[in-house]
Image 1 (tube, rainbow, N blue to C red):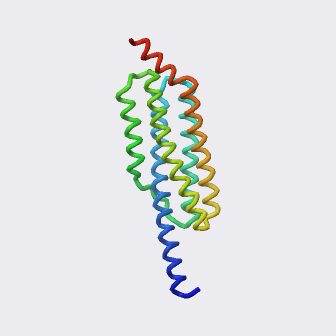
Image 2: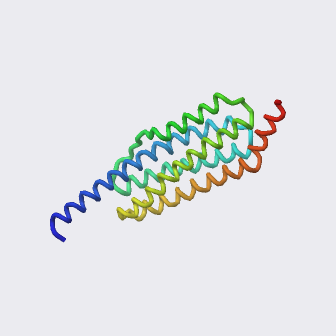
Image 3: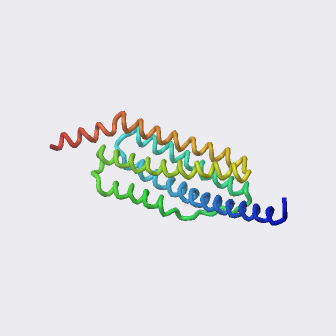
Length: 180
């Protein structure tokens, strides 16, 4: 390989690592904020099953934060959170649902499931990309940790779907029918 080719490859890898780190910083901010949001949401839902799911995912998210901190350390980068405006919008939507739906209603529970599934899908997209970037950059340990987190996010999404289908949406419909 010529010196110019090596230099070009190193620059490309360094730009790719920069992108990887920026995305890690975004998802780190997301996970920190979700720990806070999930605590608040758990306290506002009527379904015990949904409250348990939010509580379980909050504990899982705390572990995801620690896992991300380990990844930063493993690649020799400082642990930094960078505000993710896209996820901030999704979180704002969850707050909007809290303030525009009736307290103690299944309609609120349904809306919060939708908001959290939006968050889960956004996280899955980021983690899928981070897994591929970690593989490309040769960060084997980071790849494994990110794949594990991606699996957790997929499982959380499936759990929310199951809760919604098994009870919440029907209960919200019954509330509406009983109000008429």
